[in-house]
Amino acid sequence: MVSLGETQSESAAPGVRSLGCLVICHKQLGDLTLLEPAMAKLVEVYGGVDLLTRSGHAALVSLMEGVRMISRPSFRRYAAVFCYDDLSKSAINTFLVRAARKDLLLRDASESLWYHRMVFRSICAPGLGEAYLARYNWENTMPEVGASYRPPTLLLPPDSWKPEGFALESYLLLNPTAGWKSKSWKVGSWVKVLRRLLEHDPEMNILITSGDQAWQMEHSQKIAKDLGARVHFLGGQTGLEAFLWLVSRSRMVLGVDGAASHLAEAFGRRSLTLFMKSNMMNWHEPGAFNVAIAAAVNAETGVLEIESEAVADQAISLWS
Image 1 (cartoon, rainbow, N blue to C red):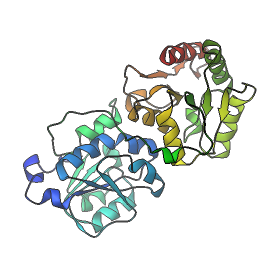
Image 2 (image 1 turned 60 degrees about the horizontal axis):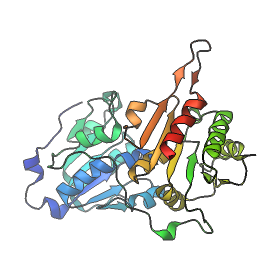
Image 3 (image 1 turned 90 degrees about the vertical axis):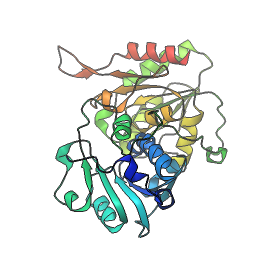
Image 4 (image 1 turned 180 degrees about the vertical axis):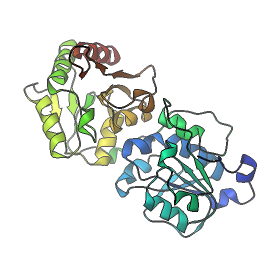
């Protein structure tokens, strides 16, 4: 963990805006969504951001104002490079780019490796602790700007991304899986919650989505089974563009800690997120319409649990 590097006066030197800056982040979809406020700060300072990230994230990046995705390291000259992961390929890409300023922001000092000190002028790793990741990224991205922090914000996806044949106008989107099985909640508990919701609102439609891995589709299919015609299953059947459109047009998003909940907040949608093992403080910032419930250890069994009735009550309250 070392200094934060240049001051605002240095970063605002003549020619900075014309050079722009490069951001490098090869993390997952949710992490990239939470990086948006920090990139908005850099857009304000440098006039634009080139982003080097996973190729599959192109649709998401197109919804970030002032951010342009690139598919390979550019050998053009930048005013600065800001890197937000500890991967060796990101360090190599940073090394190849010409820039007077090269900053690395890590979540913990233990992520700093020997080669980082050879590449980056500034390595910042104060420790994520109990901080919300989006705010942590924004606060520790230099230089300072006049604007205050605001939550991740995305542009509305175009109607051309709407899934073919999709006709629902008002729906609750349930995305019950994430990248790790450990984040999942029991099928039976989800079914109890959905039945309560359907009893509460006879006109409600529920759309179930998931990732395309076999276990994700199987898990979400089990939830949809036997719940009737008002539950629509699209698990594993949507690309990123369609998924972004569906989240952005939903009335409410329900699910476990993952990209769907971060996207819901960025699109201004209501959301209820369940946290099984991940730290709720790091991945959720409370809001009037963005609520989270964290699992607690059952004193008798020692197992992490969330009561389905509590989830149903909260979901009904948000829906209403």
